[in-house]
Image (cartoon, rainbow, N blue to C red; front, side, top):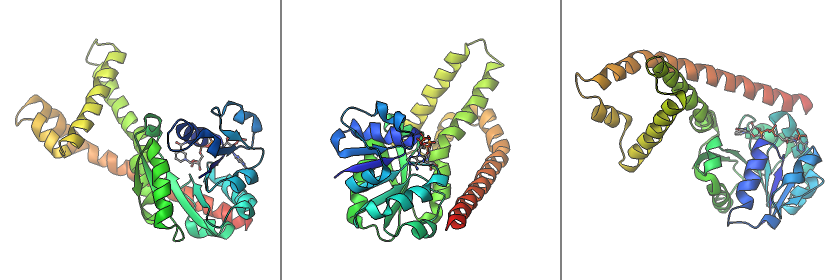
Amino acid sequence: MNIGIIGYGSMGKMITEKLAFSDIIKPQEIYVSNRTQEKLEDVPEGVIACRSNREVAHKSEIVFLCVRPNDLRRVLLEIASNLKEESIVVSLNGSVPFHILGHSYFGKICKVIPSVTAEVDRSQTLLCCNELVEEEDKAKLREILQVFGNVIELPEEELGMGSELVSCMPGFIASIFDVLCSSAQKHTSIPKEQVVKMVLETMCATGELMLSKDMSFEDVVERVATKGGITEEGTKVVYEGFPEIADLLFEKTLEKRHLTAENAKASFEKEN
Ligand SMILES: NC(=O)c1ccc[n+]([C@@H]2O[C@H](COP(=O)([O-])OP(=O)(O)OC[C@H]3O[C@@H](n4cnc5c(N)ncnc54)[C@H](OP(=O)(O)O)[C@@H]3O)[C@@H](O)[C@H]2O)c1
């Protein structure tokens, strides 16, 4: 099974490297193309750098489109006649709905949203497929995507919130803990790097504790924040003040997501 990667930017490079160094596929079975040809000079050894997107499409059974939404339609139209009937096209962009993508290419299409945590093989990658994709195709895709973590299949209408929870969440978590560490800094002479390391290790260990012991957030709070104790003073502040901020966060990001999807749809419709 050959795999094609069109667009060798942040996502295309990450997927190429992860697959090339995995044991599920040989580097010689990976075909890559990019608009700016020079970027392909550093593809991993054995990976085939192609001079055109059409060549990638022609050679591959699964083709990852790792381009920005505005370039998606052009690439789809360009490669459509070079794809085999059974080929699976995978868009890394979640904003353009299947019925709009279908104006440019009528075949098996999936949307895949990885997280930056794929870098440490712990992505919670979202997978969403159109009705032409069969169970056998999904099994193949899962095998590939599991190279960089878990795979979660979602219906198209849940892809937005799903993306907030896995793809945006590293940014939300990082910003929340950045604020917490800056605040702690005001009350201690422990150096910043040490504060950050202490919090990060505790954060990771708390997640692992919850996952391995099947504990809920409430279980952890109950274990640590004994009635009338010091921790309870802090958790009370969080439960009283933070819900309003969390609601605002999702309100803003979902609104922006809706706007981005409308713009992406408009750019597809305008060009049709
Ligand atoms: N970054 C993330 O964390 C993330 C996470 C999940 C999903 N995504 C989605 O993944 C997609 C790619 O994002 P990215 O961050 O990887 O973007 P990026 O770094 O800008 O990479 C896009 C690549 O596509 C290439 N390209 C553009 N038009 C092309 C064409 N006609 N033929 C061949 N290559 C072409 C560009 O080539 P040049 O070198 O000429 O510019 C560039 O290398 C987006 O739809 C994004 O929404 C991103």
